[in-house]
Picture 1 (cartoon, helix red, strand yellow):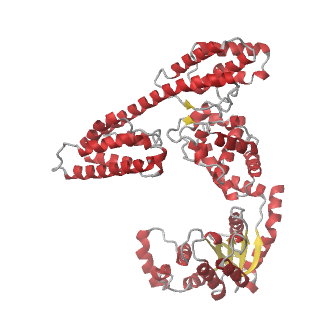
Picture 2 (cartoon, helix red, strand yellow):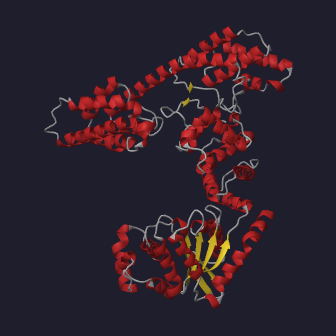
Length: 626
């Protein structure tokens, strides 16, 4: 309740004045506007929305309120991105006379013209005055209040927009509330030209009162959380987590906080309930989520920083400058790189690509949820807290599993190797380094024995499963890791190439059977950002299958799957550049196609489009690879 009182006090003088401005009979025929100013994202829109909401609470009218026998209707229009004042007039008209669908337009035009004497075409062209507003007020016995938001972010020429607002105030005596980051409009060191001088003259003439909107972050955050209604575990204090991140960030953009809460809700709702019971995990997950997302929104983090290697989603590549940047960034929030839970590339998949299909698999592998009988290495990671007899039990268990090749997860295997090297260096156990290396390689081979794709690890900077690799700076471990990395890459490349071949074979097989949905599910799911069409040897079979299927299936595949996969130009460079040789081979097969389709006009039509698209893909890939 203390937070709520603080918020009211901060802007109560603005609320009091707006009540006076709207209610006072002396200003009913107003000849000035009120400006609410503040930096972008500081809470101006939130403030005015809450002001309107409070006015609506005691009213049965939608977006209207009664006060002193007057009924008011707010018309709120964002000027952001609008190109001309006709667009504003159109938005106002659509609010007053909502047009639900384009197929109703003719009927509405007829009705408005016949019964209200309003010509919609002339209004939308901006060719007449704003009498339709007076008509609405008269017929509905309301007084309209106009709120124009984002004045500094409009694409309308400053002279045109200011003249438009001036017309509302001086000629029609409408009450106007403007919202703007006025610093962008006033003459100053950054802005000192004729347009800014024009705004200054306009302000002196039209704006009668200016207020600086301030905010109580606590109350606004409270409002955001109430609005989004996240079904949280009562023990999770999301309010304090977000507040801590907000204060540590140094950014004051409330809009980003609201957006981030919305995105958190989306991800949170897709986390299995069994994981939501662990408050330690949820608290750490929420903090890292908001840290990375807010830094992304403010531009201090980029997609390139989160995903340094673009040719696959399964890799992390060392980049000293990026590592240093990320380390210093996390320190701002009292985080170390081992606190971020997932690989940094996984966060890029979640927060940049918006792909959360694997979120529960990622969480499952965290140290919070590793089964008791499998977590001796996790307990040893915290060995300083163990009693000596417990330490011996856990160490013997880990070594036994290590010698029996039971560590089938590559990141876990590297953790175990790091611990054994550390214990050797500290003379805590006598497992020889050479024996550790040989057994590590034996485990590593076993990791790929069942056709698993594995994971490519290029450095040890990030750790895994929310834990850093032990003793990663020691010479002994670095030498061990080089052996690990080299052999792992051989296994990994072979497994990935085999999987790509298998995936392509499955696509061809499903296409021949007409199973278009299975292809779509794969290419829009696990295969969305992965180069699949890479095996040149499969090009001939692929082309033959495309030609042989029924026209409907060919159409579905080409138009609904194939064409859409290559519609985003950036994907050629980031994800699909490895497919160039395959599509060049397809291009060759199409040009040498011996099948006579002269009597199959539809098939020939579809095939010609396919040829054109393949040529376009090849050209774009070649341009991006230069």
